[in-house]
Length: 96
Image (cartoon, rainbow, N blue to C red):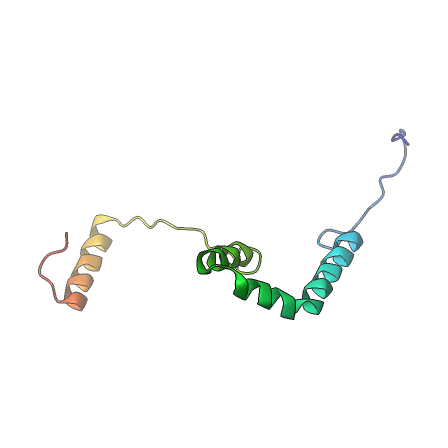
């Protein structure tokens, strides 16, 4: 049904509200995992250590937020103060 001139725009789903279908799929998948946890643990234990670590790291992407790297730039004065603090902390004469 094409949009017709003069037709009032409907509001649709409010911003930030969950999609019902997505919510149902997520809950169903969570239930599936919960119901099969002992089997999943057994299967995980049967994997080679390197494969087990790879799988856990791959799954962690969906649970643990990934941090973005940041870069800090120091002006000359701040850099001098930072270097003095590092020298004092590590008790060294020169920083390379």
